[in-house]
Image (cartoon, rainbow, N blue to C red; front, side, top):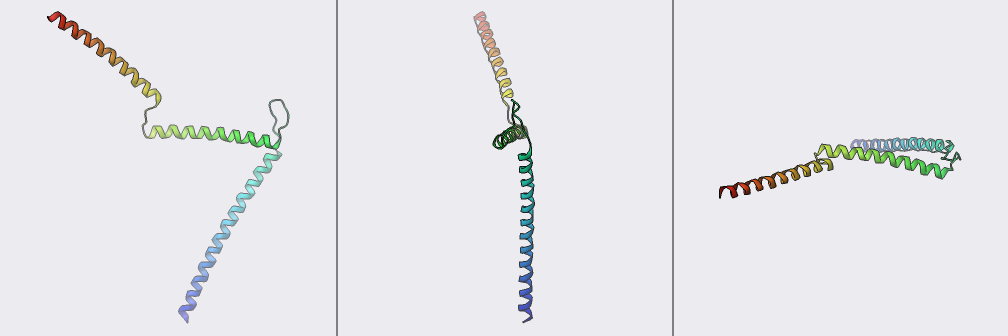
Length: 125
């Protein structure tokens, strides 16, 4: 009988623990929801004017904010991509162009060397 009671107590305590964790998650979601509401309300209350000086409507404000967010995201993504390329030492376009120039110079040098060899062979005969 004692083992059964102990088992029931352990089961009850684990159930209470999971319920408390779920309430913590729900509270955190509630806090995030409130923060989101505050941000949306501040966006709605904010007066934004276009280039002509006319007050923008809510949808236009949202589109403008989305455009700004997209630009910020593009900047961050560009920075991350540049960091990625630097970390894995991938040759950038500029480096490839420099290598192509060096290759062209070497080809010219090779052509000059071949012509000198041909000239030396003609003089030797």
